[in-house]
View 1: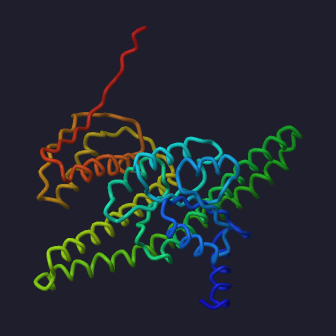
View 2: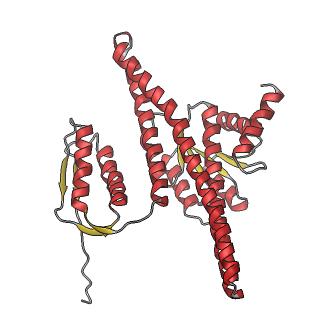
View 3: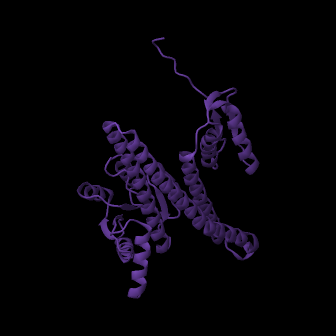
Length: 337
């Protein structure tokens, strides 16, 4: 790669995040991966810190803060999940973006890693350009969150100062200025979410679509192993699409206004189940929804809640025999009464 190309890539990387070199902690037992990823990120203008185990990574974090963590899957697998939990349970580190790198065949491990606290997952076999893009996206997300939090903190501080000075005019001016700045940052966050959705969904649809065409039109020329590989490619593309949908849905939940009213949670849950059965009519799942579950809540937001809860239960019991999903309410009785 010529010097001009490297300079252009560094400029592109820094324009996507806050100016200045970013510290990236790369954790992997494989020395070849450590060197390759380290060289790629240094070409982006990053400072790379290498660790060969979770324990070594925790020691390094206790001595210095970093901007992003790339955690490679290693043996034993449980140690990786424990490292994720330790990082995300420590106040100083929990806000640091953590990207888990795992082999393509370890899809369940990637799910377990997300449950343990990882912010994103990537296959170890992915192109380094994909890795750079995911690091850049996580750094950008963290920057927007930090700026949003800083604005909120400044807003509170200014409000307290204005109240102490007993100046209603200054307080109103401060509120208006910070509200406009917060609105601008929220607009940037929405634009970023849209960009991620658009830029990542398009190639995912191409991967899934062309893989399906190969399976349908070229099955006779493919070996069983080749067909299995293509099915894995489709499953991974669909899984990533679901992750993107979940992230965007979560973003919309945080921005939505709440409209409380009396609703029946049972009917919402039944509607979600009927939708899942319509999309997957061959699935045999026993579902029981308790009748008459009244609540005072926002119907749209509760629909999102049940879409996620029931949808996850439906998805992760796909390979289970005799799967059963139950939706019910339990009330605890206060012993003092």
